[in-house]
Length: 121
Image (cartoon, rainbow, N blue to C red; front, side, top):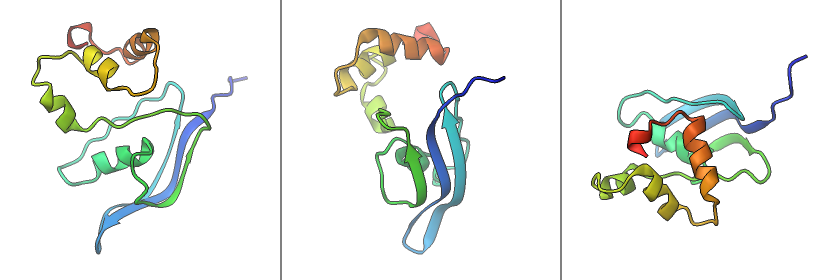
C-alpha cells in the first residue's frame, strides 16, 4: 500500500487575464509534499503570474485554488534577486527576506531537499 501524501496546493480550471487577453486558461495542477515544479515558456506566457497565484501573492485569478491549511509560501520577484547584484548568496538573501521567524535549519533543509548546489547558496 502506498503512503498517503497530502496535497499542498490544488488548482482547478484556473484562469488569469488582463483586459480581454488571457494570460492562461483552464490550468489544473496538484502539488504534494516532495513534488517539484518547473515552468518553461516565453516571456509573457504567465509563468510568474501562475507562481504568484500558487504562492498566494495574487488573487486576480478565476477558478479554484485550494491550499493546505497552515501552508506558508512566498514569491520572490526576480527584481529583488537582481538587486543583490551577485554580492549576496541565496542563503543570505532568503534569511534576510523571510519576514516570519524561520529556523535556520528549515532553510538549510529546503536547499538540501531541492538539491540546490552549495556554490550558489
